[in-house]
Image (cartoon, one colour):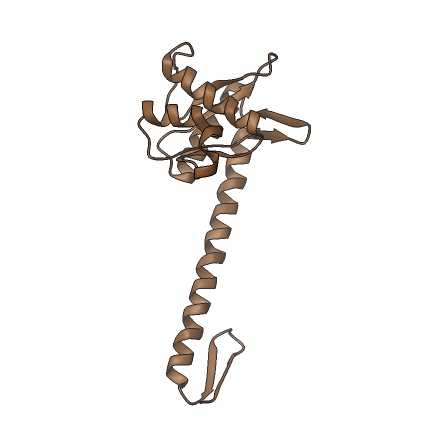
Length: 168
């Protein structure tokens, strides 16, 4: 069996030798997959740039947090996004919930979100629930939040600037 596959001037696969049809199909599938990956990366980059522009043009910090929550919800396809900012007490407090103009910051759900956000900051890493088996004790607040929502999956990540963490 002899296969030689290369691309012509337009980037299309050219195959010579035996099994030309199979080799050409494989090469075309590889090219289509690579093209789809590049298209997704371009769309994701454009969406992120647009979101950053929206955040930067926000009138104040609260509006920027709401823009971030709404934008991440749309981009990631999440049911809900909560953004929390670090306070002078070093606690992270929820300041924006996607698609919610006002929320009770003293309510049980706000406390559960706050605990999960602070758990993320303490870990200084992404926290998820359900967690890997070795990580279940480190994400107790995420488990409690998932049980109260109810949610199949919860993920949190620290928010940081070049100067350090500002929230989660």
